[in-house]
Length: 246
Length: 279
Image 1 (tube, rainbow over the protein chains, first blue to last red):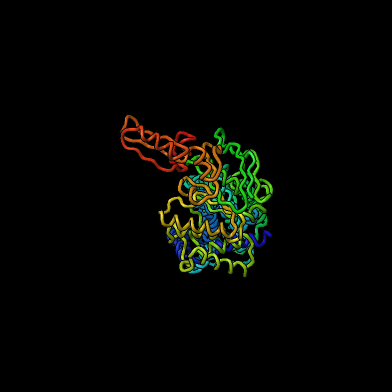
Image 2 (image 1 turned 90 degrees about the vertical axis):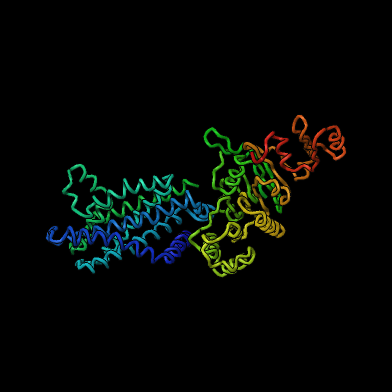
């Protein structure tokens, strides 16, 4: 019955998403707009990156980091609040649904939010005059990115025992990735050891894969496999931490 | 209907619930009465599978709360102490979510939602976000939510905490009505009056143990049904007597102001522990 149960969890999220869509839409517009102005127009004007203009270099990076931030926060912050503060998580724990269905519903809902945020940036990028080659693989990479960070949100929300530490996690883990994982510049400019660490992180593969696709260079199969691997591992980890809480 | 056998919960070195044995009959309203920290909430959390027992067993309608989780979940409705409605949803959506989580088919679900909105008198506010509700309305909606899947046992943890006296009575009426319709009710409370006027039987808990069990009447008879309190003498006096005659005879020998009254469950608790429930 997992197929019905995950939809119930997902349904709840979509009811709220629809109700708060205007607010979500407006808030998701602000930071990419600032990035595009600062790095696309301001700093980036006249800079050539790998033979293209900087705007076209930076847009895939901004999409990757926004997909990450939106999906992680959508699931992580709300589930952490639900577990520790609102106690609404108990309503799911006393219901006859499995941990797998619960996590799948939450993660898919986070993925939808991340995907919508990414679409907003794509639309903005076109307004700013970026030329990007968009195809199905591009969306698959975005969706995988959203999915894996939504699953990371579940793991963080279920294991971190205060809102402060949740914010700390975002500051020490999510924020550095936003800037270092090939989003605004190529990490091969970083010193050796750092570059190696960066190479292992999932967001690096999102940025690289999205950038290659947007440039028309085709799919990076290794990056796709790394993202799928992260998504699977984090999803299983999410199910395990939810099981443990009972 | 509810059977506890040596149910125990340890948190590290702290014993929250210490070998509880208890049998609650079908159709009863049963109260666990005791001060904060007595282990009442932990007991309910174990019975509703939110906390794993350290030892012992608990059966609900014959199903083991440690093993038959999904079966127990169908049998029970839970109204927790803290307000845990989904504030981002309307009243109707809260009921709908619960119905979907319990896999009630769509047509039956809608019917049940409408039924319950009338039952707890929230029809006019059904489409409003729960965050705009008063405390009493939230509590009623939580009860309606717990009833969505037609449970046979209802657990209420401090059902009237923080409510004004009038709202409290409304909740009591609701609990009585459900009970008249066949519901077995287990509630916790630290309100003397709630246990006394609402419940068929009361278990008094202190420091994780059940220290007395019976009807309110039986419990009061055990310690004495009449209280003599005296003020203004050398000491403030306090004594329990089995009958009014004996109390009057004693009061006759006292100087100062004397109050003779019927005992209540607070007196029972004081007599058994030397402390007040509220302490």
